[in-house]
Image (cartoon, rainbow, N blue to C red; front, side, top):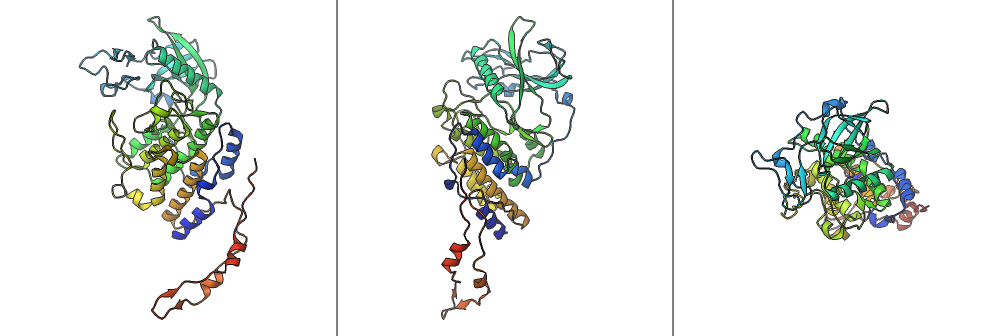
Length: 431
């Protein structure tokens, strides 16, 4: 098992100090780098459980009403509309309007094209509906609207999401089909994003089905690694995802994809910032979206999949990771623990410098975990060095061990020239 771990680290998990972090705008180069080491390396090494095939209509909520305990103001995150018999519509003390009733009824045809089947979920920015596209093969689509159509700021966020989505093209990111407007019976005109329907389950739903257990370290790393190329793609365009969490990673039939790009924003941008408590980097409100803040969210997401994290409440200090004494998985896999510590370091400068560097390290750690679990090495051809040119030290291992007069053993001595001659040659870094 030790040998497998050593081989995995030596052949693949090179220190990321030797991996240059690509600059913004280097999208094509990054894509070639990920293809070189395998964009689907996680699912290749760890067989991921396929999501069961279900009828999309079965996912519709029977009673689409936000429970009082989950009624928060989308802007200030304070509880609203929770008193007994409270009206689910109104205005928060901060001035932001709220509406916890779905604005579309089953059977409603939006923009003369999309027939609503019902509500799928309620997110931070509004309701999400399942609908049929009557113009294109009656296919299933998802409509995402606003919780408060009169809220100008919410409209701006939705418009930004539409613009980002319309420009994105990555197989691990949900695809946008259209943007339409619909006037409800009360005369209010609302905008709806029309997105592809992705069947399957979110990682949050998978975690709920495992309660009180969690995913294994290998499974958690494999799922997260599947979406890292998509996040790196966003970074190459100067964008940040900002809201990575198990709820926003969907596992379908042979694919793992990012959904809900409502919080996507330009790196370093200010203004309204959106995210989720417990996953958002502590410096986020000061720095705005950055590569480092996304990396922090990745670390917290990975931790949530494999560990039981304490609940986070508004205004409370951000809890760290449990100790190895509290979480046996961290004691069993020290390298996994170190990955989490580095990704979620409170100092952004001490985190991984890029998604690609993180991916390389995750790959080495995953191979080490599998080597420890199976007793079989899982080596990978290095992207930095060529193959070893020769063996060394084999003759030393065959020699009898010298025993000194005081009973101590004399360690074998390697020939320096043989070691140097056997070392692999660094590969040329081609553009």
